[in-house]
Image (tube, rainbow, N blue to C red; front, side):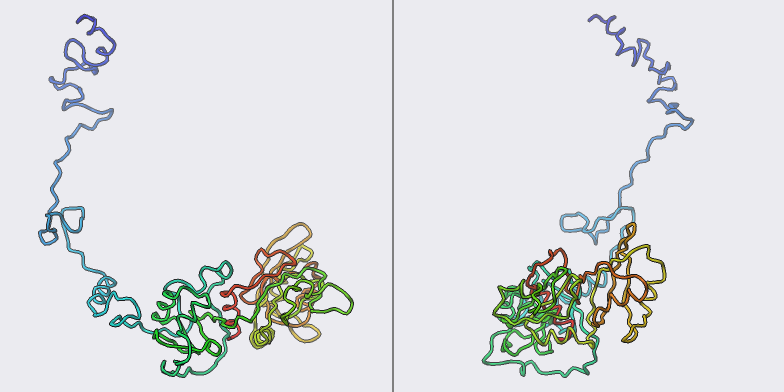
Length: 401
């Protein structure tokens, strides 16, 4: 292409022309409005200003590392040394103690302070690998005054003919033996009501009562704990002279065990029924002094007026005395029907049905979904499952075992 052709091309016509002017029509050297001139205005009245030179940040020599770089980078012109926080100072002080960093239970290791009561788990949970019992929350114990605890030396808990405590715990499925040793050293294990922190303690599994984080460990393998989701029309007995369906029809594979059904559900009521051969647990769960809460879903005809729930909580006069619910919650409402959740600890016969009859709303359907810390979840009707060891521990703790 010739010189003239290059000058007349669209590309050059949109940039500089042959007179050395820019697209704004003025020569930048004459102080025009060229992009590089002092009078350039980028679409407004403000004149272009060159940026100020960057200021070099002052670096305190005391904060520099061996390679000359600052040990802690902070933007700005004034550098200040950062004082260690309270946690950092405590951690540095602990690091200077002899035995810091050694595994718990080894010679020379720091001895942790024992913690009493239902301690919070500082490490892995007991029976943490089980499917059931993960969401039961903290261990709940009955609020009964048992008097002051008597401190017993750990030497008196030691049984020379027994088995090491960590081995007993591992055999019960709490965790690996190594993790059980850490639990003991952290003061999370109780034997017969006393906190144990020494790894050499031996116990008799047949007589010792062991708790981890307040959770009771059942060491008797002969004990059976099951949840039965009772369908409507099943009688809450092991045998029925009239030939109606009963509990034994669903637990025939446990024919060698004598099982107790904890409490009763009438024929028309569905839901959770606990089965066990632990007579002490069954007695405590049904005894009114332990006030074990039971949760029910109640379906009645709607609409349900306001104030009836408060009336049920305040107490309703029945033929055998005043009864009430511990909590009342409206779960769902559809045209003509209302679903309500109530919690109460009374074990009187047909107590939920009689309460709703007394306030003028007969029960259409009644399902018990929870007893103490144990819930039905998604268990299908007519099925039976064994409780997990974590669930058993919560259940035993709820009645003080």
